[in-house]
Image 1 (tube, protein in one colour):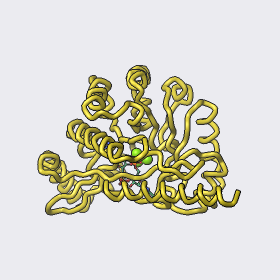
Image 2: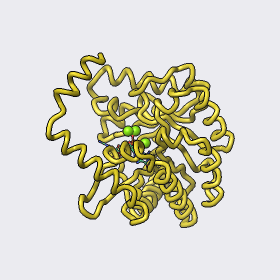
Image 3: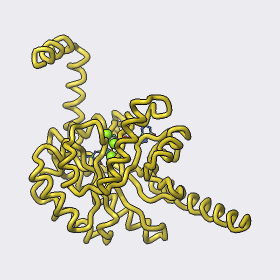
Image 4: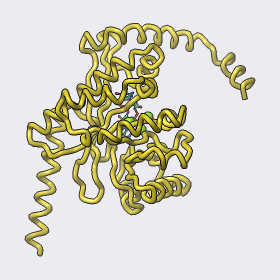
Length: 292
Ligand code: C2E
Ligand code: MG
Ligand code: MG
Ligand code: MG
């Protein structure tokens, strides 16, 4: 295995890769100024409850627009921020911004919903994390139940004892926890039970071909059933089509998130999305009333 990686690593160390490293280095440096210079912003993707079609949450997703390079994907810069430690201050900025946004929406009359915030393994490993999150909730006036932290399986499994303790501290404050990209890592199922996770996020790699691929169908179904029997809920990521939606609904998946309903949105557009959704629900209710 090691030998193979070494060989591949050697084989693929091309000029393209050197260019990539130069870019990585430049991005990594530029990231230091990104927060102060206001180059970061958040977009919010609606999370929809399948039972009634209502918007019950938002996932905050980080965006970076560099003055020269333009849009840089989080898939590219988050790993750099994790490597150089900037993910800690950036992550605090994300948490603060997302909670302020939820507070603003609630003050503007939107119904209660959860704000899901991605937490990197590096952030989770910070000793003062539960206190920091608690302070942030107090500062922004968001009830703890309004916050859901998205952890990855790697976070949970690295040092399970310490992770379990930390999750317990967060749960004790009333904060909700989910496992992101579930099924792509290697969680121990016995730990999963101990962690008191609220929700599993079915990774989009299982959702993509769910209408046709029996293996993906089996995996998604198994995740939903296991979650339910352990007292957790499920949300499917990357739902793009009505067929995927119908399958997940039939198998009892609780929530969905994906382009079928909406791309991640700027705050004002998210606000309109929720108001339109409420209007549709009300119209449906009126119609049902008339038909009855
Ligand atoms: P993730 O947390 O698993 O987020 C889901 C990703 O899928 C997002 O990509 C989202 O825009 C994308 N997506 C949503 N619906 C669909 C769909 O229907 N089809 C497809 N093909 N994609 C969909 P994004 O925004 O590029 O983020 C990529 C990853 O970067 C995230 O994956 C997360 O791991 C990380 N990330 C983003 N923001 C933050 C952050 O604030 N902190 C940390 N630590 N990581 C973040
Ligand atoms: Mg996520
Ligand atoms: Mg995910
Ligand atoms: Mg991901």
